[in-house]
Every structure is written in C-alpha cells, then in structure tokens.
Length: 418
Image 1 (tube, helix red, strand yellow):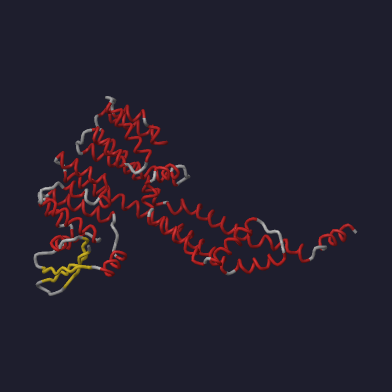
Image 2 (image 1 turned 60 degrees about the vertical axis):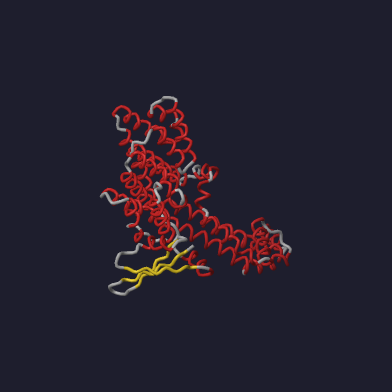
C-alpha cells in the first residue's frame, strides 16, 4: 500500500510530501524522514490513484542501494545506533519502495531481528549477494566495513551501467525506427505495389513475396502492428530475467564484442564479492559458496562451485584456481598467476581486489567506448534492412519491361546482329 506523508515545517509552515510504500502509518512517517521540527499527516493512496502512482513513480534503482549502504556505513563507523543509521538515510532515497524498506528494517531492528533477516524481506531490492555480505559482516563484527564495501561496489556498478545504457540508446532508436518504417510501408507503399505486380502476373522474388504477405496480414489485422513494439517493450522490461537465463547467458558470451562485455561484467561482480568476503574474514568455504551463489554468469557460478569442491578436498586457493581456470576464458592464466603470487606472499585479499579492480577498469574502458563498438553493428543492421527493402520493392521493376514489351529483347538482339 502507498502512503502519502505531508510534512509541515513548524517554523515556516511550508509543506513537503513524500510517498512511502508501506502498510503502516508509523512506518510511513519513518520512511518519509520526518525531522523534529516537522508535523506529519499521513493519508492512504488507494484505488485508481494508487495504480497511477505505481505506474508513474520512480522504480527501484541501484543508486538508492549505493546511497543507502554508503550512508549506513558512514553512520556505523561513527558509533551511531543501527536503527538511527537507517533512519537517517530515508531522506536520501528517491523511490517509495526504498523508503518503505528502510521503515521496515528499522521496525525489525526494534523487534530484535538482524539487519540481514530484515533485508531478506526485500530480495528484489538487496539481492542475495548483499544479504549474504551483511550476514557475514554481522557474524564477523565488521558490519561498517562490509556496508562501505557494498556501497563502493554499487557506485562503481552504477557508473558502468549508466555508460552502457547511454551507449545502447542509439542502437535502440535505430531498431525501433526500423520496425516503424517497415510497418508504415506495409500500410502504404506495399499494397500499391502488390496491386501493380499482381495485375501483371509477374513472377516475384522471395523477398517481395514475403513483404507483400506481411503487408496483407497487417491490412487484415491492423492491431498486429503493435506486436513488435509490445515484444520490444517486454524484452526491455524483462531483460534482467532474460540475461539471468543460463541458456541465454551461454548464447550471449559467444557473440563477438558482446560476449567480452558479458564475461568481464560478470567477473567484476564475482571477484569483487569474493574479495569483500575474504577481506571481511569470512571462512574460505563460506566465501566461495556465497561467491558461487551470487555470480551473475553461469560460467563464474560453475567456477566458484568447482573451487568450493577443491577447497573442501584440502587443495589450496591457487591450486584450485589453476584447475578450473578454463571457466575464466582468456584471462584464466593471468588470474592464476596473480593467485600464485597471493599464495607465496600471503596477500590473497590484496590480489583478489587487484583482479576485481582490473576487471572493473577494463569494463569501464569498454563502457566508455560502447558507442564506437556498437556503431559498426548498428550500421550493418541498418544497411541490411535497407538493402532488403530496396531489393524487395525495386527488383521486380527491372523485369517489368519483359512483361510490357515481350518482344523487345528479340528485336534488340536482331538489331545488334544486323
């Protein structure tokens, strides 16, 4: 349920409003970040108004998650109580769902629950990796350090994702416009050409027949013109689920350029998580298990799963890395070399952080060049589509002369021979 909280400043009389996704008025006030000099008035948002708000309000974002953990870490490092540390972050949140989550976490802490248990109530907001790290921090007594590491990692992820999204804007616009052009032509130009070619009884190439049949379907069922846009919308909306599918992950990693980005982005997250766990003095078996469960790509999940089996059998970390380096692609030998150094110097934490830093730097550079990387692919796609349309529409025109003047070729040949 959505709650609208009006906060009236007792000194100036000015009112600001905040929307909190919760089912309790007291929690709504906490989530709105009420200050001591403010008076709160809570009202429910129900019915059609709630539906409109949910459709139009900001969705959950990694920026809120990064701000939350960074702020909590800063407060905990200064010995502020856990509940107060979360309460102070309410005004930093941009989305109602995170304000509601903060209110619920504060309520759970007051009831004696652990922070990790409270976060488990919001798996879509915090994810298993964040919950696992918080739980490890609670057990190791290093919650401020863990929250700081999560916040830092999230900020880096937000920066990279923003660059990737900016680079994808141009290809997305080209794809949408291409689909729109094909649909418009199917309703306008293609029917006229169909009548012309049909009246002459010409034998048409496959491309022309295909686009004519597509046009006939759209003319008979106009609402089907919305289907491509619906499909594109569903793909964009459910991209997270699609990208998490193991079969699709294996497919993506085989695509030139795209596969490199997928592998490096997954490795950056996986090794950063593993480095944070080791740095937090979590037991190696537990750290490897958590890293396996939270790795974005199936190859890295398999890598850490196999790593866990070798460590459980008594093998060292460097030796386990060497045995399973094939899961890491071309970077496998380089990473094994780094882990050998870690084994000899006893600096596993530093070396793992170095691996994570290297991946993040490479991914950052690739994200900065994403538009240049995707531009050739976009041009190839656009050129292919234009070539197909030109061939489908204009290739029959060159053979119409034979139908209109069937003896023209013979007369021309006779003139040449004479």
